[in-house]
Length: 141
Image (cartoon, rainbow, N blue to C red; front, top):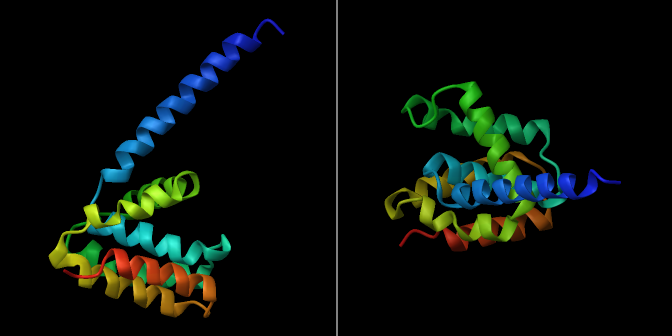
C-alpha cells in the first residue's frame, strides 16, 4: 500500500503531539486538577467510575466552583476529559506529579475532598490502596 508510509508519518506526528500535550498537562493546574486527577485515580481502581461516585465528586467539587477556581460545566467536562486521558495513558507519571500541583497549605483541603468522594462509593481494597498512595503523596507538610 503506497499510502502506508504517509499514514505512518501522520500517525507518528499525532502521537508526538499527544505526548507533548500530556507532558504539559502533567504539570498544569492546581487544586481542582489535582483533586480531580487523584479522585479519578482512586475510583478507577476497577476501571469504572459509577454514577454515584461521579455525583459525589460533583457535590464535593462545588466549593471549588463557588470560589471561582472552576467556572462552569463545560470547563469541568473538559478538565475531566483531559485528566481521564492522562490517567489512562500515563497513570504513574500523572499521580507522581500531584504534589507539584497542590500548594502545601492546600493539601489538607484536597485530601478532605478526595476522601469524601471515595467514601461515597462502595468499599474496595483496590480503592483503599490507591487512596493510601494519594494520602502519602499529598500528606500536609
